Length: 272
Length: 261
Image (cartoon, rainbow over all chains, first blue to last red):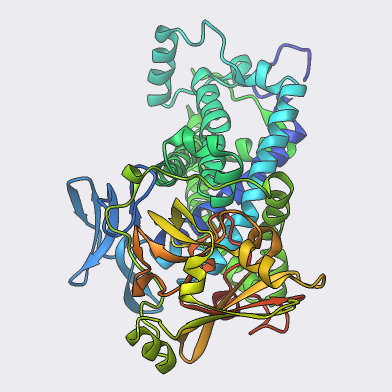
């Protein structure tokens, strides 16, 4: 990092190598995990709370097809989702499947292969997360760049940042060197809550791990609850990625993507 | 002002460009992933590495661990069936009609004393009853009560030869003429909760759940729990058995042999 006071337009070193490597490995891994996970979900597109849950038991969420129409049911609410969920086109034919073939790995129905993608990339996700966590603790990334200060967490400050984001007023000059409080909270939420929740709820679904480390499944109160949490946390990560991509696009995509590839970031000029 | 306008213009073009790239990424990934997985070596070796690693780690950290046993109040009200629910084999049907009075279990392969056990003889052996959770590879779970003879007790009677490494279960049901079979390693075979179950929820094992005898191997997924078991064979290698991958679904659609996750 340069010691000089940054002038607008100045190029600064923004992201460490460990952050950049993890970002891109993780981006690919999360996409493979999501798409293969959707295929696995297609094998039994119903979610339950508790230790058990199968076809005779009440599902809180269900994706299905009836009379050629696809639907998503959440609790008592039922939505017609024909074309996307429940019934969609594949190889020019309409077929009944929860998530459409364009969203799954592999593209057709293949539980065995989807599990191989998922359970191999799961190691990459978990070990990558662990390595990044250790590196971020060691090099101060977590403490210096990600942990929000007391002042940043003050409701007034957070509200000011929300208003600035809503007006698409992003930090410029010296302030753009650091993550703002909303960024810190979002990145920490994914790093400390959502990704660990994915790994732990995934392990809780393993009958062998449940025998070896029973507290894992106890954290959730049952294997089917863990499966539901796994599904919900996956969509929260999708939500993060969508917001993240929108923010990158709105705040100068080439500068942002370049910074995450080369580490070099041009401080945006102040607005007049 | 002029400069701001210029930035907005490029921003828009970049935005459009990146948006198309963003939408294309999953499509490209899907195309690439399907192309990669078409190669048997990618499918079996690269993508099989996660399962292989899980198997090694599970064996390292918890080969003796017991599966959770539940209280009777925690059981599924109704336990669904899966796979074949009634074998087509004429022999099995004749035996079923006779209440399995003339049915017997063969235990052979790499054992010192091959054995044939009637249902009455199995029921006379020391039994274990356990209420456990059954996890299907598809994602659902059901909790039921199982009663049977620990597999280790049967194997102790026949005495395994030193070369034996796996236990294979040959079943009466078939898919398109191929009889179902499954196999487990000796860690699972000797595990105290691995039982040959003849009873479920306090009654005789129902037909849909594999009458008269099914395997319960509680730390693995449902397809390992062979139903309608007719013969148990101790082997040194899985290669010569069936299609070589240790089980019917392993051979036909590529489910992983180790199903602990």
